Image 1 (cartoon, rainbow, N blue to C red):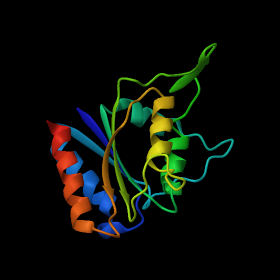
Image 2 (cartoon, rainbow, N blue to C red):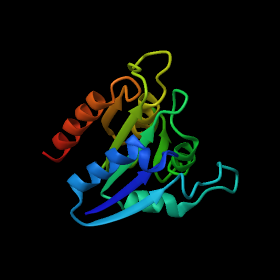
Image 3 (cartoon, rainbow, N blue to C red):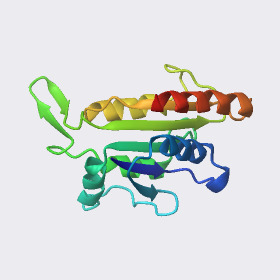
Image 4 (cartoon, rainbow, N blue to C red):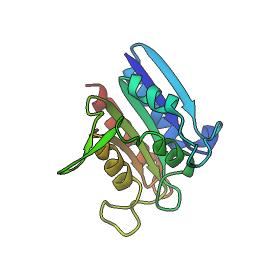
Length: 172
């Protein structure tokens, strides 16, 4: 089994999402782990010539993808968005049909570790993190799983305990 481990937090060792992704990979690791740190080695923003087919190939080759997605200003880091932009490739990860778009990568397990200082419920005016990631992965045919450490700025111990319990449940 190959695990693609993606981190995007700019907070280094203080990052909650990095702590969560390490724990998830530790629970699942039974083979090769390919690691990419989007903060340490950021991608340029997408341009007409900005496609890198190697990034999509790396994603497709992985059996499981673990992504750290902290919330910055109600959404995901731009580093993570730049990486996601390289995954949405017509004819490879999705296609348009008469009945609308169809995702082509449905056989992939994607686990996203969410972290935020506050608590923003789905459907809230301020929540564009989980909803965006769910929509993006659904678009390419994947139903992502989420581990959430919400409220780190308010009750960090409780937020981490809830996330740790969710991580243990993933491996079951």
